[in-house]
Length: 380
Image (cartoon, rainbow, N blue to C red):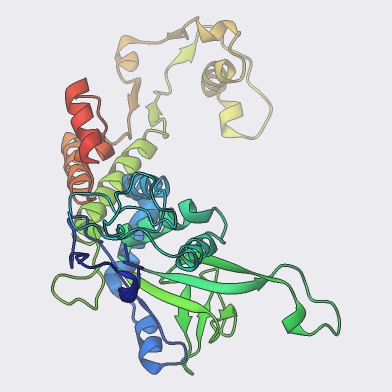
């Protein structure tokens, strides 16, 4: 949290620490619009970021874990404060009112600011909530983007409240200040270094809002430990596990789909039903064969009418014993290998361990008691 008290208004003895124990997990910088270096940053796309977004869309556990962090962040209340001298204390909120119990002759506390500074700070914080959903939605999308791709943009601009009338000067159109979070795929740069913000993946050249000089585009990213200007993400290290989980799910799904086939029934020509129907006059081979006709009726009728007697009365077939032994069913079903399930569980556990959350948040707390559940909640 920034120390917003100007140095000239700080009282003697107030020296905010350079860093507290509640360190931010992301860095931020405002991009200069029209600068080639800024356009180069926008154009840069890392392959693993595309893969993490694909994992977010394909793996439910990844989406749940990222959304869990986003929902937790959305519950935070933002306020303007100052860094305390004791890093174990929460930053006190600024105020323009003196405490009645303040001893005479004592220096003013650092959170006491003049009325103008107080008004500007609160107004700035309120302006940041100008987008849809206010501060909560802003923090939720910010947390999800940092958890998945490790990088996003905070986009602020003025939008017209209503459509301008014909002939009305643009400067007379009422506007409102809007801030929202944009993913790295929503902010693009053209060949002329013009930066645009789009809302869909198939945007054509020239579509989207041009980021003008009066707009703010702030890059927010989780700094890589090796190269600080590059983004990093906890999910990046679990991409191998997400790919393996998807492969195991495909194998399990293919096995399940194979069960939709009823297989093949091998019937000797010498067998016949007890209540044989007269031979039909149709040209279809199945219609000419009374055994196949009765067999199909016996199998299909219970499916169409559950109240039919054939749903509970077995079919009766007569024939020589040697031919009855040849009446058999061939199953085409693929058996699900137990190793597939074990590998699924192992991949899921690796994903949960890499989501920067307690593993039980992803895998569930069914196997823990109320004491360990409380500990998990505290860790979260």
